[in-house]
Length: 194
Image 1 (tube, rainbow, N blue to C red):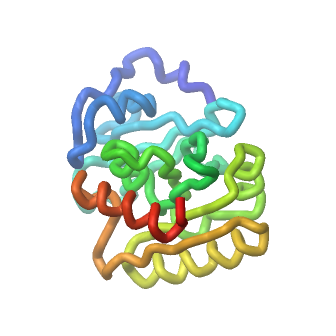
Image 2: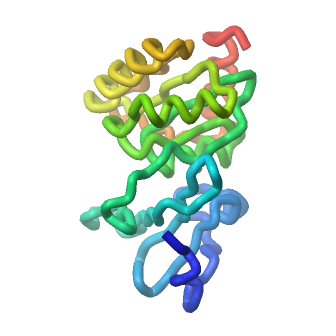
């Protein structure tokens, strides 16, 4: 996918929607374009730095689909390909979970784009980037809890050390305040011994 075909008429996103600083939006290349009206768009890059697709989040509540992937057939990698901290990453469900945690100081947060999308191939890419441990923080609903268990089993079968932090029903890392993220960082340091 070439972002350049949308360069004409596209504008860098300049807001701070959902309490995420504009610096974080800029870091991940957020933009707006008339072809994707009402959405904040992100170029999603692979480990090699190639743009594999665009993902856009609609900013109006209850719009379906909430997320748009272009092209729709794209295989979405784990994102972003961060440098692990003490060999570990924090794996969350959604793009805005990752953006919010990164924005508030948890700079090894990585997005899975859903609870059922984590594969052995995607985890193998993490290994090539020095990841040895995965701390899973999925949403607090039933799907999140079940998805976390499945990812934990898969990751442990590939010799990652894994922790899961179970959130309360209705809790979502995309809504965490800076204070809550700081508490989470301390919690992870304790449970991982790092």
